[in-house]
Image 1: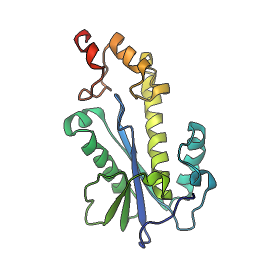
Image 2: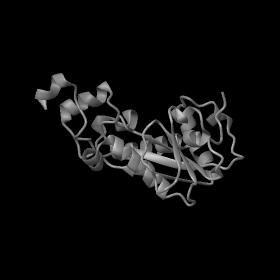
Image 3: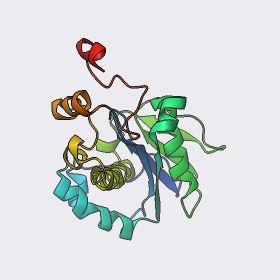
Length: 200
């Protein structure tokens, strides 16, 4: 099934999505994208689960084709302070703030959002598999976040963030158990399973 270009009848409809919500380290990153009504791309159309290679192919295509796009990181200290849901929404708002054109409608992946200014919006479960602008936003959020995690990997290679991107893999948790935590870890998250708690 091909993705739709528009949800509303507004001409500047923005799609937004985030990446990194379930990670133990690093920021949550959101992107916002307004696509022209003429936009079409078969790779994006067919993409429920894109490979890293295909995301990297699509990123410059989306950026060259978009009417406007932007992304925003919200970092671990703020995630710990306001919680991951609020941080995710803050990242989405921040990415919409940076758009060169003000959208007149917003479509959001998932079921949680807070009003942005007075712009009407709709939350759409699995929106990234239904609407092109949300799919494009999900790719930008993921690729910009991955780039950031690869950069901080150089500082703390023992956690292998270039591979796991901060997600709670067995390898990542084993490294936390062995080396402790870094300034990039989210202190409010359960960084180790319960049985390891006493060892920290």
